[in-house]
Image 1 (cartoon, rainbow, N blue to C red):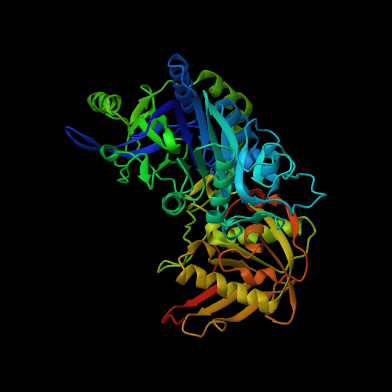
Image 2 (tube, one colour):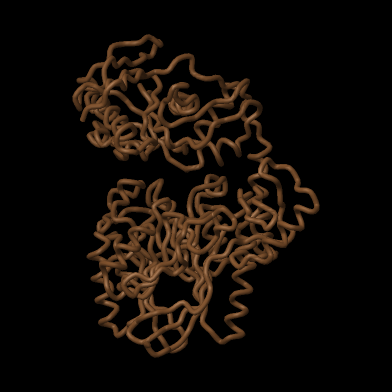
Length: 576
């Protein structure tokens, strides 16, 4: 057995997605009296801060170092990000006392600028060893390459692509890896380059070993399967702290959250951990530092955060009978993977005064009324297609015209909308926080008709045949038919464009059309690669998609489904 050199406490979070408030989590509890379905208010940054404060106090009492790591995807997910664009994330992560964070893909959903602004507000290093920023434009107002807290590939301001944390007398190196296919799933600026994961990992480990450091932590946003493969293929990593796949390790089967994964899976001498999602859970482990660069988990694991006075409801939102309440709370207090934590008062004050109070106007701001609900599906089914997505496409056209910008057609990818809308009044909070939670910018540019037709076909093929359902295109001022039985390249037909007088005109493949769409789609993601052959440089509208839709909906007062779909799908026979 390897000699014990020391110990430290590791706390880790990932994929918090701006869930600063608690969440009503559906659980299926295996009580002695039988299964009970409930909704329990869990998580949130005040409880997380309260838990971490107690954990740090214990570490101090035991004279042990304490390390808090964030495995990325702090951005997006709630109205907090839609409204504050990362400012709240920076402030609250600083208050938690994060020691380092890796860049997640959602940190780059709207380009580098929001992350660059976040970098200027945080007090901890941002890790991304395989992100090469050497080609970053010199005249950028938000450069990241020369920032001392940007721990990336060959940054002059931080020459080493890793940091070193001292666990008493033992140095531990920490480096970060981001998805090397980042341009495929996010929207980083074009001057960013992402290096291959395996080669970068080996190069960084070699540098660390050359410095005489044996214990190495990889802070990863690659996802659990890739973390496990990396541990198998690359030697020298003591511990991988991961994110991206929202993986919950540990035995949560008695709460209906089982994934069947052991906390701290050991693969090729490397421990792999991940801690769920949405600030519901946190990982805490007592880590032993052993000879030859190895680590061992002495005790600990992931825990679900709630409190004795947390709201507890039935699956349908009703209050439980007093006897049920007592049985459920006794079960939760006794479960080893649940922690009853009093919310931290200072964190709660910060959220309430600086951020939550500013969101109340969104919740009370009735934007529009719906005589009946609007259904959203990504791919049309036997009941029809999305009733929401075509209205979002219309909203982009409306907003451009309101700003005096002439555009011909709009396309909105179905995955940009997240929910159906129920009948009745709809608030700005519902539209910006739940329907369109991703703070996607809007671009307009000229594209040749032939490329636009290819982009439509590429997006539909991606949605129907390649599993990327979110790419399905819902248009405005454009109609088409799709024939799955035709050869590739000839499936989109009967295209027409509505002219400035509102009349349908035959589509001209040789003509340039001014297209307005999300910047994500404009970058050729998920089958839209033909749009990269743009005839003019994309120009930003200056608004995010939820702002444009709110303005559109407010102008209408009442939203109704489109009279008829602007597409026809003939899916009788798929051919490749």
